[in-house]
Image (cartoon, rainbow, N blue to C red):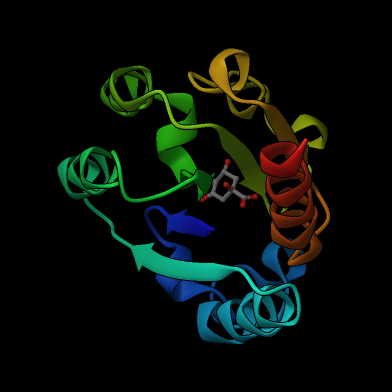
Length: 144
Ligand code: DQA
């Protein structure tokens, strides 16, 4: 089983970026935790981060036939991107939307997501554990 883990804009700045909101861990730290967890479960993971909407759209297209599930933290594109929504509808791969912060406790513009209604589910506010929860879910979902 292979799970693709996508991170959108500004997530390469984790650790430096608003640490009171997003924590002190870098994206590499978080990816390391996910990689170790995935290894212990015998699951293959691939990581991709981009600050560009089109690059994320293309990565989702490339997952067609190659990935069993996707975990995405779309960053600010969560709240704006019909293109990423349409990419998920095109490939029809089960995915979970994740956020480090609890978007519902923040500005109202962060409450709207273009992805939530077509995702298997959403995990928001658990820091790096948002990704771990999503991974555990996708593994069990695929095996159920
Ligand atoms: C985020 C929440 C988004 O609103 C924000 O634009 C991000 C990060 C999160 O992980 O909490 O870039 O997706």
